[in-house]
Image (cartoon, rainbow over all chains, first blue to last red; front, side, top):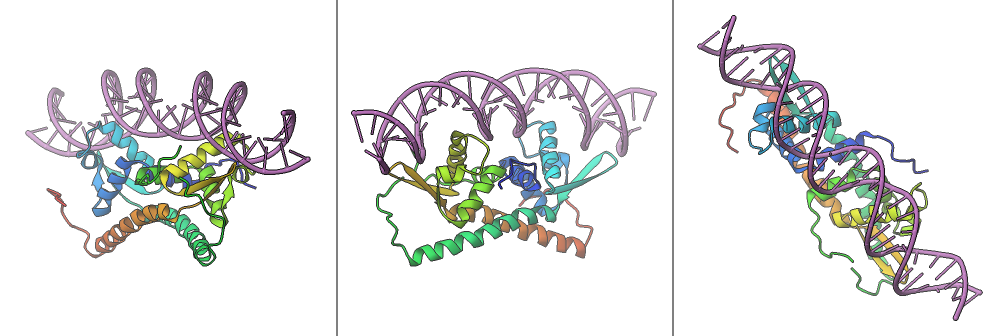
Length: 115
Length: 115
DNA sequence: ATGATACTAAAGTTTGCGCTTGACTATTCT
DNA sequence: AGAATAGTCAAGCGCAAACTTTAGTATCAT
């Protein structure tokens, strides 16, 4: 049956994506790899906070990083996205199927224009 | 009380998707619309908790519902997904591009990174 | 009308998230 | 060596999320 909420990678990915700051970081890293300080520059928050965001992204598999000397360089990990896209694509198939069939036979008792 | 036409922003969508219970609900609704009680049945939590999850999904634009008599029937709202997929697809292009170019020439220098 | 059904609303608790500060380590520069 | 730079660690604060329980409102069945 539907198991109780078990910790899953999917959780981590979507949760990571659910924060505007982290999406902005991803966007920046999409263009080129960057150090922690580079990433932090445009944000109006402490370095430590940005580090924490990067850690979340890294745990989720969306980003990976490598420290050389005192500089940690972060980059996108494309495999991370795959998981999210996969989930969405699978469901989308189902939903759209359902909606096409619905369009064909729209004779439900749908009447009151609710919400 | 429902706030109609709540434009699903990206935060809300990904945050909604970041919970295994809610993804399970979406999965169920992907097959066919269902009432609140139907949705709640497989879960080991109170009805009220499930209602709250559904409300989160609704606020995010991923689900919509309609109450007839005493039964609220919930169904997928395909537009909600579109937003998430769109975001992911756009970024994916960037990332993959970036990785291809990276393979080509490994020594782009960076300074003054205007968009 | 009475009672069961299907939610809905509100309040309270616990846990986790996003962020800060302050202290600390490790590297590079002069 | 001493000072600046780049990041790390940990404690703590405020707020929101995820549940719970309790109580209440329609609606449907008998």
